[in-house]
Image 1: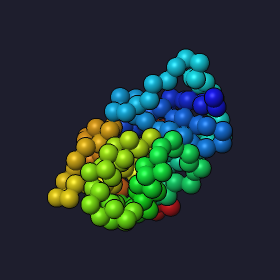
Image 2: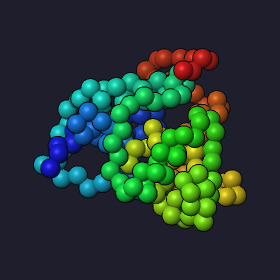
Image 3: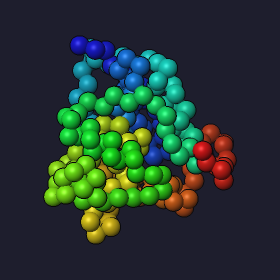
Image 4: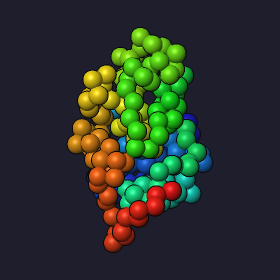
Length: 176
């Protein structure tokens, strides 16, 4: 069994749990998120690692409106199909949205919107693998494991309608 290091981080949208396996980010969840994994005491190692520290720095910059592209080594646990959906999500540009059907077409399953929606919902790396950018075919918000209010806030942040300064920082007009 590989040891996974976990760390709590207080984001502007609530407590998040970060998980690292070796030198890669394996998980990022809101503490009350649907599909949050069961973590046994023998698996829980709450100590900083370089990737967890870097993740927190990049998330802080993102929430402050100064970062548009995350640059982190990712290692989410999932099936080959789920990973294909998550990779398609990463390709959705900051500030844009797509639909579950659009993602299904992108990965070569034009009739697979429902299966894609299920994979999106089980994304273990919230925000960084931007599942909040996936909408229903009607263009409306449909589900988000972290809650629809958070999905709305993340989309508003990326549309420049909501800037969340952290620790006295001011949001920049020139995001990376």
